[in-house]
Image (cartoon, rainbow over all chains, first blue to last red; front, side, top):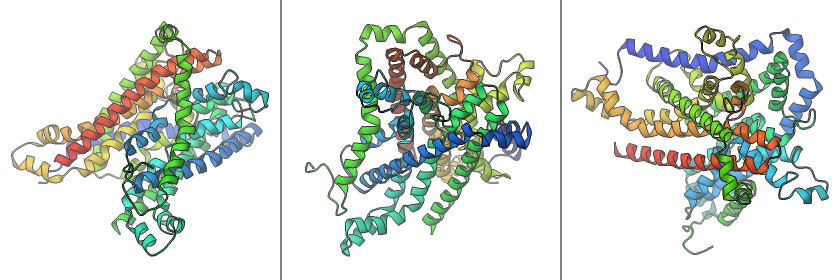
Length: 274
Length: 278
């Protein structure tokens, strides 16, 4: 008998417990969203999604992600280049500082930007004098989103870049390629799947962020409501079917994210074994 | 650059990439976070203390930490079982289950919030059965614990899973050949090796749960002193323009989060040390 496994009964019992827990906490909520979204039929579902406020919320969510994700991508590539390719003092400290936003409550993330840019904030009077709106406006929403998604590309890229080593770049440089040419022709192609992976995870969080955005948005309909905030408003107004219809879009985003993540993980694994 | 600060390399771009990293990090994270501490220093110790020891604040801290701890314990047990089953056994649909473990991280928290509320409300699919048992599902600490368990599950599974995968099969075979039964092997050989990883995962789940907002506020009930979590109290203070109060509560939470993060890092270090040893 194999010494590394348990009797069939125990095995089945454990699989049963795991799947039961899993069904209760993951599968049932998934079914629940679509059940409620379609509880009043297709027409109500489509009407909820075609509502001007819903469309404005989707647009704002996309705009926010389109600004936040590329900025964090550039940061992620720069940070992983410095951290993975070089050995310098304070590298571990820098790594911990980059992960810092993950351990800050989203509400606190929103709060810090209110303290800086809000009416009573440090820059409040100056901004008012120049008629610039940050809090309760698009810039605040984007800033809060950048903060909460800050490490998401970097922490995926650093291990990928590190596992690549420096040999290929060193060979290119020795053969006379310039620094930038080496970066674009050697390093970037090597980490392209890692980059895509980071973008996908960062985007999912950017589009779904609720707490931080909620603090800085001011909840102005059609103007500063992102899709998650739109879901909240509808739900609090007891428009359950419409709220779940909007939520179903975010669930689809989550599912697409997971599928893409699984595919990319498989590609990266295959690349390692090949 | 100071000599000796960086190990020599023929690769270019160190100053540029590190410079940009530190600039962006300071601009987005460090300076804004520092503002929180600057703001709190204008408060004065006495005022700071009176805010964070007010009945309502203490009740919110107690609730946040209590439910976060309860959910971390639930995830320690079930998260380990899920990780074990995913690594060791094969069953139909295993790859889908494996991919869906990250669902709570990919799903926007507000969606998780309204969905769990709907499920655990007195008339909901699960809530009606809990009602019969005399348990209040949504709008109670029970409901908050459910939401935090949902959010924390991937942290435990994803830290325990790789350690189980890396476990050297020979140590189990050695234990078995020396006469240990299966239960003894699991308890005395496998568990001690994965324990630090389990602690790391549980601590990460706990830290995330303390600050969690979106998935909790719908299911919590939000009654001051009873079902009001700490992040919601910060929100309430902000809406009343009590910036000083909000800052004080936030500092309290942040300091505890940082201690937890340090603990998680320490457990992580223990894990790699353990794996290196066996």
